[in-house]
Image 1 (cartoon, helix red, strand yellow):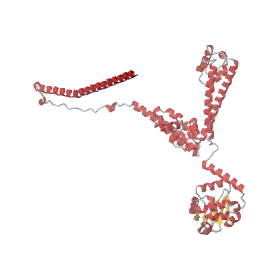
Image 2 (cartoon, one colour):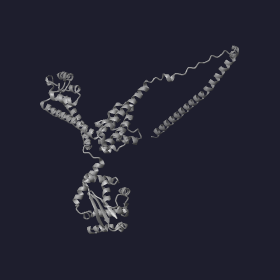
Image 3 (cartoon, one colour):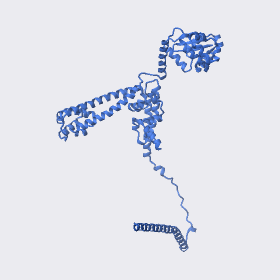
Image 4 (spheres, helix red, strand yellow):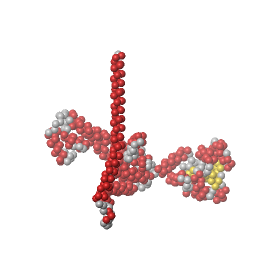
Length: 498
């Protein structure tokens, strides 16, 4: 009986000396307690070393997938003759690989649970069974091959490290918060000296630069601010400085305000630099998602999920409400309507849609995003065709929705309301229909009597109802009066006793 043993170094083919030992697998460990006993139990027939890491990776990939690699087929055909293939049995650890070898080579294969103890024994004494392979060499080969196999499985690329995106978007959000705080503090601080400028200049960066350029408001008329502000705003600031109602400040106050302005300018410049870095990273890692929802929304989705791979595993329904978990669970708890969108709401495509169509567009965008994410995470191409195509389809759908609404609003419905014209034939004169006035009078009186009797019949139940209501009101009033009298009497009695 032959035993095939695969290692990171190569293929080894052993000959089992006593085939009957496999009938008692629980006692096999005794034959591999020492190197001498192991060499007596199995003999090395052949060993084929892998030429390089690529060769080893190709072999291991095939074995993992349950397919027989080409180099293994050549090795077995060269070492096992045709007669041996008909007579001998080949022991293999993996049942899938065993069935593949059996189909292609026609050799009898044994790959059930009884062979695991045999493989465990060979693994323990492998260095003594195969000469020329040290423990350090085997460990290094195993480590290198495992890394190569992991890269192959995950299609790993050092450019596709989404951790950088997660950190960059988190830092960008922190910078925005800090920048708003610092800018607000500059406006409040300098506003004591020149309050009118806060309403004139809205942009934080421009405000900080103007404060640095002017200093004291009395210097405003002599300072050239054309590099920072447009001409109209510059004239407005200078005019406001002449009639400002602000308080006076010292040189020391101004120095501290300048230091804070420097912080605002530096943080704003760093933020723009970080945004460019994030933009380039997103185009490299997730080009399709970026084309569909934009850099910031895409980065926030990846950051919320933890990684691009985790996000690509999510269904479209989850991507749609990602970021609105608290609202979702609150709605489920209180049995209200669940949220229709989360972080994806900030995408430009949803902003284009009308308020009542936003939910539909969000659902479509989430579905297309799920496709784009899977292409970005698992696909080998670096193009953004899927994202661009998805965006065009959603834009066309938005136009259809908006157009349909407009068509309904402007549609002429007058044609529907028109009735078909029918020509009524004129009736011929009938003498029998003529009635003499004397004959008609009794009929008229009879009609009037009938109408009077009907009116009387209708009024009777009304009168009865009114009488009943009056009676009920009177009874209630009497009861109330009796109760009040009783209470007054009781109060008087209590007072007399006291």
